[in-house]
Image 1 (cartoon, rainbow, N blue to C red):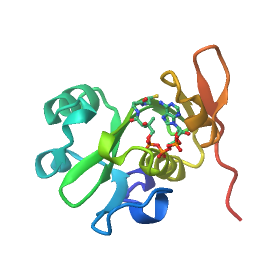
Image 2: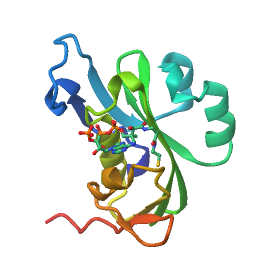
Image 3: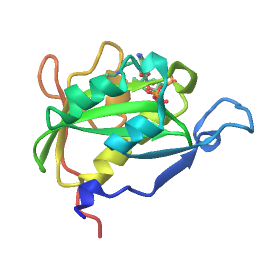
Image 4: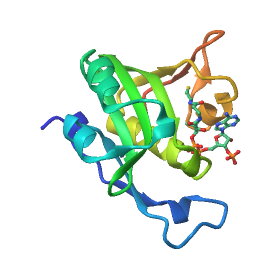
Length: 156
Ligand SMILES: CC(C)(COP(=O)(O)OP(=O)(O)OC[C@H]1O[C@@H](n2cnc3c(N)ncnc32)[C@H](O)[C@@H]1OP(=O)(O)O)[C@@H](O)C(=O)NCCC(=O)NCCS
């Protein structure tokens, strides 16, 4: 199995991530690459504005990959990646459900992706207002609309 296909052990409990107090019932969130199976087994939170069919057709069908932040039965965060090569990825889409925003879900999801491709450069065209979000993840502005993150230095 290629490293990129592995389900990475990137689990965290939102309770530890949030600055605000949240219910003790907050479920554990797992961050991993999504599969076709996930689309039939897990519910997609409606405010992510995508459907299983649109992911299957527009993402998997186009040769892209998607990563999910998921509770036991629901996808609460989603990102779509295009890869030109293993050394070049573009974040095409990122969305976190309203109920889970500002709790570290988006940044943990992107970190999981970056850790899975340490030799890759990442590019994104940030939506208005999200530049700071990406800056904190190591992205820098390279063009008027574009931000890039260089490959992660090798671990010693
Ligand atoms: C952007 C987004 C993915 C971030 O996910 P998240 O889980 O809320 O992010 P995190 O909790 O890891 O980090 C939150 C921090 O990111 C920054 N941030 C995120 N979105 C922001 C926005 N629209 N405007 C300003 N700052 C923003 C803030 O610093 C925020 O910290 P705060 O909550 O203390 O204000 C999420 O807000 C979202 O789905 N937004 C709508 C879609 C979108 O803009 N996608 C980006 C596509 S390029």
